[in-house]
Image 1: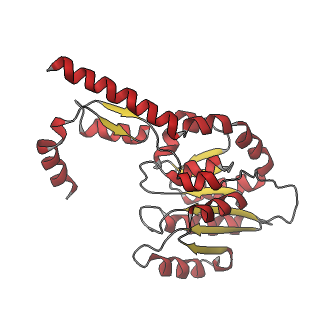
Image 2: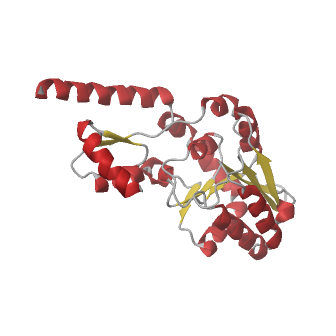
Amino acid sequence: MKRIYLLIAHRLLYRHIAAFHAISPLEEQDIARLFPHVQVYCLPNGPSIQVQKALQPRYPSASTSDAIVKFIYVGRLDIFTKGLDILLEVYARAVRQAEGLRSSLILVGPDWRGSRTWLEQRAQALGIAAQVQFTGPLSGSGVAALLTQADVYIQLSRYEGFGSSVAEALLAGKPAILSEAIGAASFPELAQLTHLQVVSLDIDEAAAAIADFADRLEELSISARQSQAMLHNLFSWERIAKLHLAHYEKFIEGATYSS
């Protein structure tokens, strides 16, 4: 179906455009592969305005030995696309392997075609039902409150063009574990952050990242705090809008000259 769509859209629509806007370097590569002769420019999306307004960054700490490390995911409960089946497997593996790790996994977001029932049953089968919390859909302020209270953001999507919740979590000062298929992770500014780890969809690798982040929360919080100015600039809607306008002006000038 996608091939048919691309064939029709290329003939009827895409030949008229000046450029594609890619929301991540990863998407930019995909567009360039499909349309090698079309101009592409890359700018990220910013966070949800409602979430950003309500965020009160709190930097995680492991200063108390009895602290419960809270891992959080935000997004619809789309099992395949968001890799939630993998996430449960990874978390269960980390819980079994990391002795003394007291933790919880919070899944924030609406049900997706009955997926919550499957996820609840899977968590039960993996022996982690008591540690996995489903909140259902929340308001922007509700999402911000849970991000603030959490310690580590984790998302292991199989496909993700950008990931607005990733931006929101980083702006909340959270260390993050992301799959390599998430577009936001492909920005060089984010790839160099020491409190962000990009992993393959390998259960052992991702489980090791969970244990490592739980052990190094205080260290990672320093990196998160130091990177806030850069992150706020990168995800600033005002900056992004100005750059879009600059690109639009360039395209308009090019169209004028060519006509």
